[in-house]
Length: 286
Image 1 (cartoon, rainbow, N blue to C red):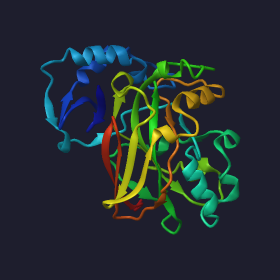
Image 2: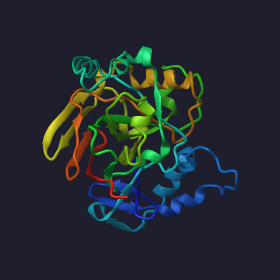
Image 3: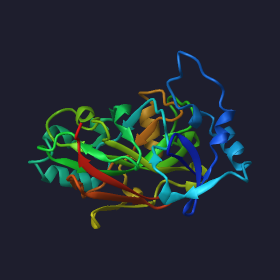
Image 4: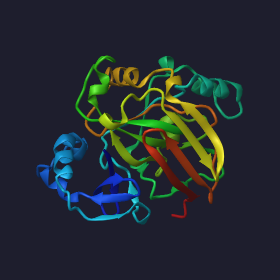
């Protein structure tokens, strides 16, 4: 199933070029009161929501190109990200000393993971706003993993059973000497979409092709089989440090070919088994 959020917080099932509006399925969620939970309640009840959505046979529909797509996860507690998790990207970073500082080119086993602010999260229907146009800002396509159940110290053998689904992630990055979490947490610098493909439909996260184009020019092309630390290994690694909660998102790392983006350009990102999304880039006029 491809679940999307669109327009004014509507929930939809993507079927070809159509969205079936199943927002009524959200009524199965229990009412919440202060203090609100620190996880995404829809993802936490994904089985109940799916069952309710599948029963809405006569739900209204609209064309996909008429909708404004939001992040498929509304309220993640954490955005966990993996640095330099493709060998070819690590090699290109080591070779480009002018762009990548030496502290940022260690292997992932040495560097560990980092967090992106949840306030940086948008969907493809919103533009990436370049907040520091005088500095180089790069695109990074990544397979994004959405956690479906609470887990702590899970083994890689059981890790995929805790996944709700998968999306395309863009980890937008200002280059410079500062810590990753600062340079990657600006508003709009985490794009998730165009929808979430549930784990049962997506299947094995290894062996998936990915591509990123800027204004029609291919910039990144890779396959998730080339991850240094696989998706199950990343979940094992992350859950050894954090309790992972429903709706937490793991950005699994970007391959080689990262490059600068400018206002006025359009990013098109695709991953096999998910689809593709288009995101506009603009100056931050605020």
